[in-house]
Every structure is written in structure tokens, then in C-alpha cells.
Length: 283
Image (cartoon, rainbow, N blue to C red):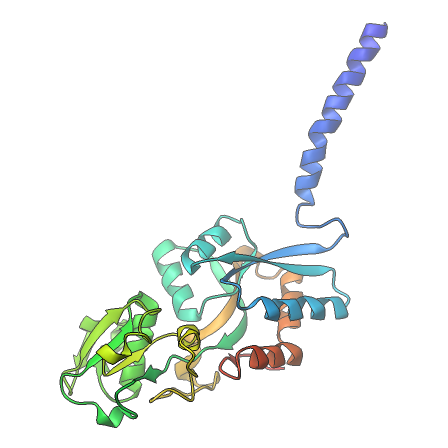
């Protein structure tokens, strides 16, 4: 009888031990203080102060939701992690990059909120205006699909080239239908373009690389695109918060977007990026 009771106790203990991980897994998105933790994938760490402000806003609003940033070195693995449910949201990409990723990899994502607009302007160490462009001049643009397409769109807006409209927001060099100055447009690693400007008449690259070169992405540009996020031409380049489509209506995510779309976050963006990044939301 004693052996039987001992056997029953062992079985019950094993059952309890097995059930603990399952319980913890079911509550895995809550921390010890009962807060609901939402993992947000970002590229780099530069936006950390923005999300710190979002967490402060969530706390002020009485929400138990808290954001935990997961940093990636590139956007491609960040989207892959979201598709694999390793993270909950992403907040690093603009509409054009998102749509390209969805098209190529069949992701089922949905935009739940806009964040900011970052300019992509033209820079030069040789000329101070695009009106001084000469026949055969060399222009450096980024060598990745979405930013190359965006750079070509900038050159089209400036009146230097015309593009095949059927190519949408990601045209390639071969989609140029008119090049009146016979410009030599060369794709280069975007992080190197500012340092290579002496080898080109002009170059177009991302604002973070301009800042890294100790230049102002707006004041030091020889050609600037409209900074207004309400301008339809800028819509593809607005950065967004993205969820998996089947989870887009989660209450926690709505609270995060509400905490982001505030005057305090807009102020932090303007302070952190010296007015270069334009808040792309109403507050």
C-alpha cells in the first residue's frame, strides 16, 4: 500500500513539473510584474530613445503593455523573425520596402501605424545646384533595390530623367526612358557614398549616412525633396509599425500606436534627429 501511495505521489509530481513549462509558455509575454511585453524589431539602436518615450506614455496611460526592442543589423532578418513569430511587431521599414518584401516572400503583414519620414536628398562636393549638371556626369545612388528605386524617383522629380511608370516605386536603372544629360548613374554601397562624393558629380544616400559624415541631411543638400508626409509622392517612403495580419487588431498593439502618436514622441523625434525626421502622424 505504501509503495502504491509513493508511486501515485511520484506521478502527481511529474505531472506538476510537466505542467509548469506549459503554464509559463502560455504566459510567456508577461514579465514578473504582470506587464504584457511586446517585442518590437528595429534596425540598429538609434530609435531607442523614441521607444523609451513610448513606454513612458504607456505607463502614464495606465496600460500594462510595455515594449521591448529587439535590434537587428538589417531589415530582411527582422521581417523573417516576425514571420516566424520570434517578435511581435517591426518598426524600421517604409511602405515600399515592406511591399517589396511581401511580394517576394509572401508575408502576411499589415501596417498598424505610421512613424516618421526620412528624407533622401542629393549631395555634392563639386556643385551647389543640379542646374550645373553637365552631360556625362556621374551620379551615385544606393545599390539596394528599394533605395535605388527611391533615388531614381528623386532624379525624376528633379527633372533629370524619366522613368517607366509601370515600374512603380522600385524602378531600376534599365527602366530609365529619358536621360537628357546622358548621366552615368552608378550603384554604390549607400554607407560609402558621402565619402566617395569627390569621385562623383553628386550622390544620393540615406540620412543616417549623411549624419555619420557630419553633414546636415537638409541644409547640406543641393537638392531637397518635399519633407511633408502628407505629400502623396512621399507615401511610399513613410516608416511604419507592422504586425502580422491575423494579429493586427490586438488591443495591446493599438495601445502602442496610441502611445506613439503623441506630441511627446514627435518632440523626441525632432530633438533626437535635429528636425531631419518628420513625424508622420497627427498628434
